[in-house]
Length: 70
Image (cartoon, rainbow, N blue to C red; front, side, top):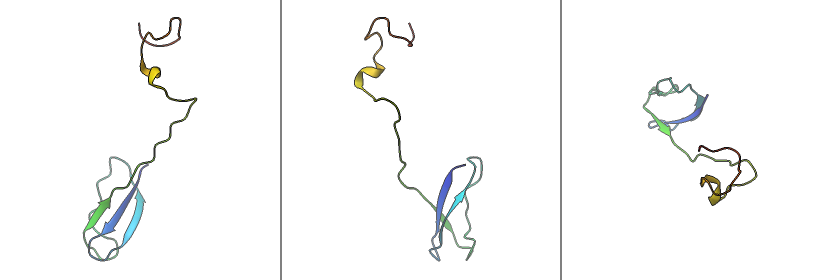
C-alpha cells in the first residue's frame, strides 16, 4: 500500500498514512478538523541489473540474440 503525506492548512499538523489506491483522499485533519492538503514529494527510482545502454532497445542489432519479437 502506498504511503501518502498530508498537512493541515489550519494547524500545520503533518502526518503520513498508508492508503490503498482505491481509498478516497483524506479531507479533514484528525486534530483540529481543518482542511488537509496532500503533499507530493520526489519519487526514488532504482535501476537494477547489469546495466542499461542505448543499444538495449534496438531490435536486430545482433544476429542470433535471444528474445525480442520478429
